[in-house]
Image 1 (cartoon, rainbow, N blue to C red):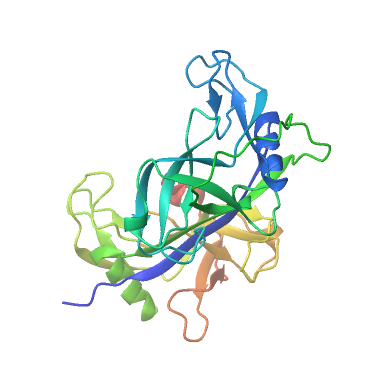
Image 2: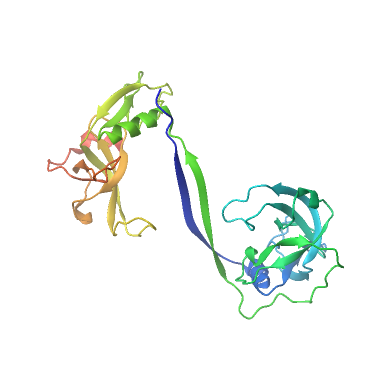
Length: 313
């Protein structure tokens, strides 16, 4: 039996968001070394602050400073920190109720080991050396055995408040394609495109899924399709993707390979982007040593009639 295929994959993008008055004040305060909460109409102080009361849903904007010291309400030990986490050595994730607050803030606690952490222990904020207006301006919490710190009485008003943030989002994971797609990938390495036929409706699906999406029955019969196909629909890409060495504009299309009953997507090259059209007949272009087609180009055949691919739109 062939080895199971796996591959490390990363999904990454910058997430940009604007800030309302409450979050703006909170993050600007962190930049200035001040922790701000928001007070509800019934007198509770919420840290981190929110714009609407989670109980009554009323809008709340009454900012109030709390102390940078507090008490651990619960915790969990992190034996193996991951990329991008607050500390590079083992630490505790803790919920800390800062002095003056009625809710707890999640962050890291720098401690020598799990035996040094307990619910009820006193901690204080360790500020980052360089602060920009982000939760990471709190580098972490650290154990503290002194008296509760006194707030400075900051009003929450700042002349140069932060109005927006850019947060990098990233997911690292290992993907295993399964039996059907592994067969498909191995065939591509031989410059062949293989789908699977449903034993009930007899449709050929490329890429194969291991089961018919219409009938719900397992598929196993291999069917070689293509290599040529027909553009069923397409879009023009005008925004350059990070780490993708393709100049814009370019065309990404759905292509129904000859013999397939499902269109796959691929880039169209070898033709000006504004000349790509539905029904265009195309063929794959393989780069040296590549395991899959680099792109598809015009095959030099007459365009396909609409009725031959309308069911695949």
